[in-house]
Length: 118
Image 1: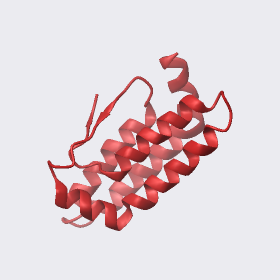
Image 2: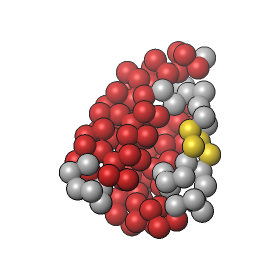
Image 3: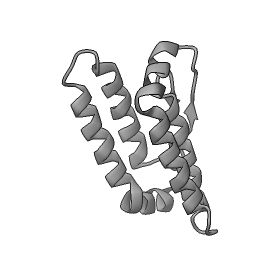
Image 4: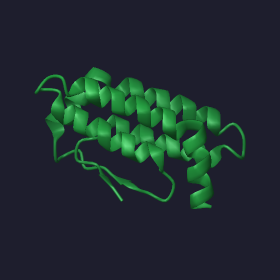
């Protein structure tokens, strides 16, 4: 199930989402101040390709200032977007596993600093 889910996810959402995260990371690398945020974008880009079978462990206390800045600048908008897409996926029974992956991505895009992807 994990492999099939990852393949379908890659075709429907993963490739496009990963490209957008990578482009955002490249733009953030323009300044020295943006490099830590770019690293988080690249981490999320790698996760969006194959999210099935992987878990996210968030620890807000590791980098609270980075997480607060991320949240205020663009984290909450991205998280809301993933929540809306997840709710749309959960309308149908077939889309529920994909909705769960969107909820994981919303969690990761809300507080990416200190998050570990297993």
